[in-house]
Structures are given as structure tokens and as C-alpha cells.
Image (cartoon, rainbow, N blue to C red; front, side, top):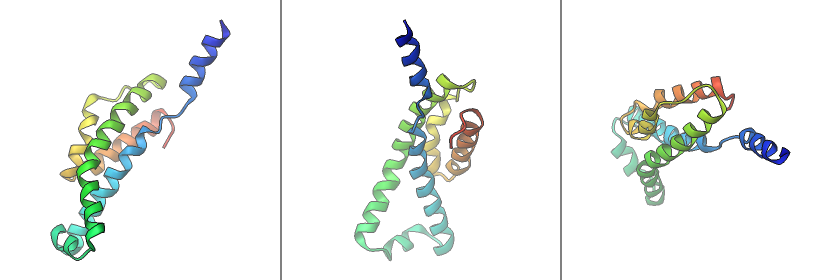
Length: 121
């Protein structure tokens, strides 16, 4: 009888780490925005970097939206189960928004609201 209560309490006490998948998208988008602002275009700045770094940067730009979408999906479930806030399903589109530059404020808004209700980050 008490084991069921105890297991449900420990399940809700665990912290979700899915929000960490939002960070690579924020970092990548910020890096692209800063590079574009400083050098004029991101392609001229990428041409001056060594090939392995350009490859890793390109892979991160292509995979960040998928990682963000997966992370937000599972983090939404966690936040809804432990708090009064139920994040909208549109937050899953946050990864695609990062390609267009509006993902930075939307990602920060999600993390701010998450902190307000859950406390972390």
C-alpha cells in the first residue's frame, strides 16, 4: 500500500532534464546571428573556418530543431505533471522558429515560464 504512494512521490520528485535540449538550439541560433551581424553573412564566416568545424556547425544547425522539438515535447509532459502550468503544444515548433531567428526570444520565454512554475532552470 505504501509502496505505491512512495513510487508516485519519487516519480514526481525527479527533475526533467529534457529542457537541456533547448540549449543547443539557442546557442546555435545565437552563434549564427552574431556571426551574421559581425561578418555580414554567415557563409563568408563559415568559409574561413576549418572544414571539421564547419561540418560540426552544419550538423548542429540541421539537427538542433529536431532536438529542440523532442526535448520540448517530453518537457511539456513533465511540467504539466508536476505543476499548474500546461505548456501549449505550439512550443514544439520552437526548433523551427530558431532557424528564423525568433526562436531565441521564444525559447527564453519558455524557460522563464518553466522556471516560474517548476523552479528549474
